[in-house]
Image (cartoon, rainbow, N blue to C red):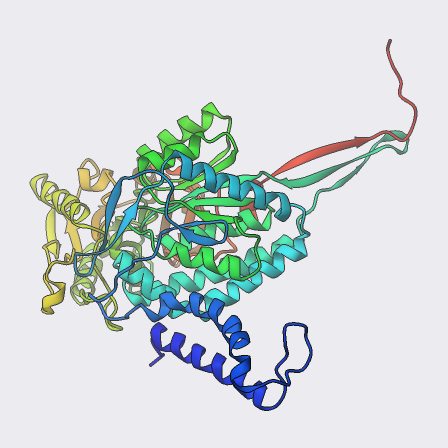
Length: 560
């Protein structure tokens, strides 16, 4: 098995010592002036320490981290400003941060006040002055190095994500892979960002310049903390912007790794800063006069408030909000693929995914067969310690959210839905997990379109199965929602597949698959699910602005 982050850190430290002393023994070490070292031995120790101390400081968080569930704790500051971790200068309010698997408090979060937010924005603004003048290829190199470092530290970051979020380590590793792929993708685009030349009459011409916006604010969600931070920062930095990022107060930890990696990769100090906090901190960011753009991932009510605040400053926003997406299963589908797709559409990250296909419409001809197979597969999902390799579903984010999901299931039963499997609280056998936030994945049958469980976003491992008879009927019912984030269809009829997804009012559609996230493809919603796009070339449009330049090559003709 791969070495734990603690062991990796220790090994790196030993190798650094070994390499330094081996160089001295060979006479290959150099002094600060670059001349060969002739002193050797004890007299060289100050120089060796100067070499190692910065590296030891970077390794220290790894050395303190245990990979065993129920053992992690964090004492370091959770804000990141001007290239280092700092405590907020104001704010005062604290919040507990939990390990969902055990219910333990693993650190205390200090919320950032208005002064701390201003310092973070000013630090980013100063870094922007340098970064915005770099070439696309220079930005490319920094992003590629950051991607390499993330890839190299994949297991360490994934472990942090699992500890603080509760999802299985298997899923967390995939999230980290998508994260470094995102940075690589935008590194590739950074050097190709350009305007266009337009020829005008009489030899005159015009051209456009694609320019950065300035200091962008990213506000992340707790279901994909590290990945969302990469989705927002990669296109922002590729375009020449700086960013101040506020993660969810439920999952404040892993984004600090991204901030440190950007600095280590060569980004100017302050280019990517992190402020922690809740509603008030978000308000300070949105109202700050030096913030040029806001990108938010989260709930619809919070998105509405952010849009209102941004409107007062005429700031552009990208909103990736909630969903209640349809997954349509036609009778001519590959049943095995459709069942796999339905499980992927509902139970990843304990069902806490905005684009989940939780309204599963099944053609009546195969309703019983499909339902039986889905229930059988759902009952086999192993719930438990998310750091165990064979776990497929971990713990929900916190106790209040777990109770909220339970209320939805109770209400569904009261409204006539049938619990086909799961839905109960789950207590693993391991004593250290007894206070974790677990439940059994749930499948609801006998559902109707007017039920609350079908209309509202539950954001938990709850699948609602609904029968349908005709294509026209199911398309109308699928679109009968205020949301429009995603949708999917399973069928062997390729014409039908394209016809249906063309009719779906959703921003991200899948044919014969679900919940895959290639960074090359734009992601975003219709209607109340938000606007703007993340990923793909389209994201560049939302982190840059066009300047038009008109060049006259002749004399000016005046009507005066």
